Length: 167
Image 1: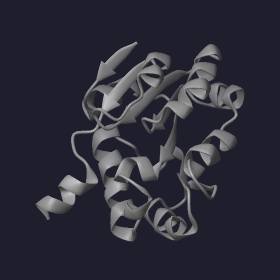
Image 2: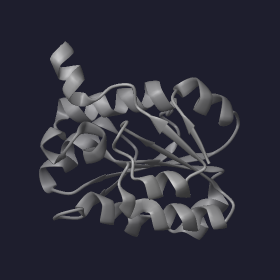
Image 3: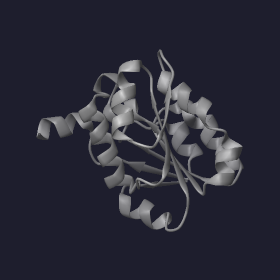
Image 4: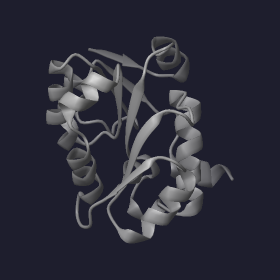
């Protein structure tokens, strides 16, 4: 399995292919406390820039608490939303929302936007059905076993806290 580091590589790999984005927005912005309107908008722009995510591509965006639901909906219009309250709620909501067999039949690539090891089993299951699994996360924040289950790992070039410091 490969490790990559940029949007150009993933964009070239996806020419004419269907992708499903499975987004743990709390993981992207560095915690549930950062799933604000500004944090969610930053996450969307960063995914568009670094993963070449297009507005017409399918995505499921998950949060683990109610206050994050409206910012996520506002930042990702037209995308499916999933919520599950509690510890690892966003993770569990995403796993419950994805049927590996169905996803692999409909999409050429499944992009798991999280580094959490809880996604290892679903990533491995999707690969057995023939779809390519790409994991995208922060450097140092992607579980080793998840990297091994994926075909490719892409690391983000920035974090939300660094973006706030630069502003």
